[in-house]
Length: 239
Image 1: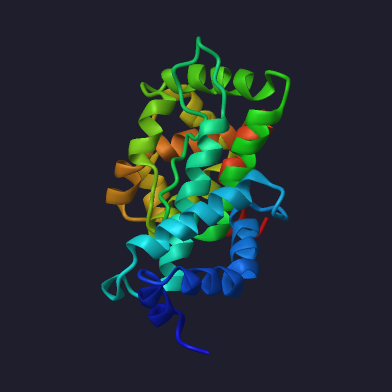
Image 2 (image 1 turned 180 degrees about the vertical axis):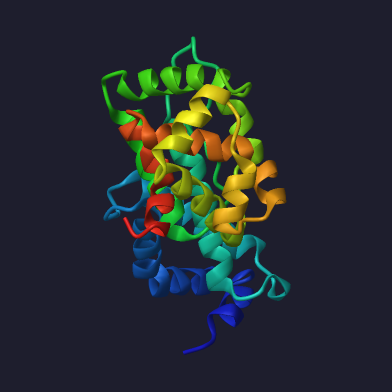
């Protein structure tokens, strides 16, 4: 069987080769769509149509300079599925905040993306206002620290190493109720104490201060839906 990268390049002038590629990759496309969304996907689901469209776009736009075709089409599928689920999320007109509070870049790890998509999917499907009430309550709390949900998209960590450092800082505070109380009273992170006991660089703590505070408030409060966005923080702590 020919290398898939070569097949894709040949298919640009030969529709029959395109059909061959789709047949070869059909199960892989379904499996990857299932992995990204965190649930089993079949050809009867909208996600299949979206993934197949992304696959077609990948074939049309692919060239050898973009690396391996499989990695390339997976990137496009992930982006399209993320866009789809974001489009499904409905907001209250009174709330000018984004439920995708810790915004996800398409190149983040698949597990992290699937968690966020699962939450967004739940938001779009549920009939009640629980998630919206959580967003409103959390936003009110954040305002006491001088920021909003909108600000979090700008200060959320992207690199895995930075995310791990932020998680370490958050878990340290959560394990020390006295520090949580101090945070609530002073509205300031105890940067020196965190730096000394976690060895997280001061620069990271300052740059991601809003994110760390938001994570502490959500994980120490009554925000079960929003807490799902921060699954990786508890995982870092072995929980």
